[in-house]
Length: 151
Image 1: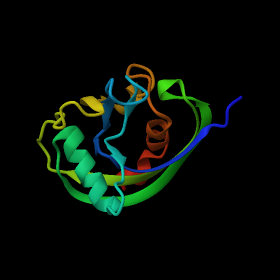
Image 2: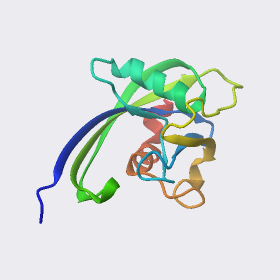
Image 3: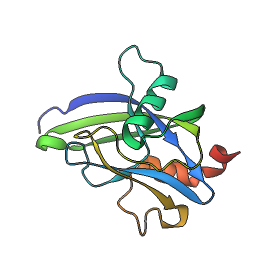
């Protein structure tokens, strides 16, 4: 078995709620894993502040602007398996989770055309993982700890 490629990625993600709904984004064919639902957010660029990264990613993927962003939690995932391009990968993703407050009354829409997000929508929390699926583990984590993000 070949030695897996080692990858570590730092991401900043927005947990945006509206009553009993959470804002989710779907991964496009450009991204991985295609068709899965995640939180608005993504990689922190080299030298970029995570606080600025979550605001940038939120806007690119949803067209929404953050009024505030408060770091609440850290989630991580470590998997060793075949990933995109049939490459064997040892992947460690570190996810900074921010409670984000947005301007009320603004409809989300994908701004970055051709990027890794092809859809954004408000989802009833009770539908996450059942009606709306598949969802990334970071979404399950955020839903399981939702009280932290709404207090």
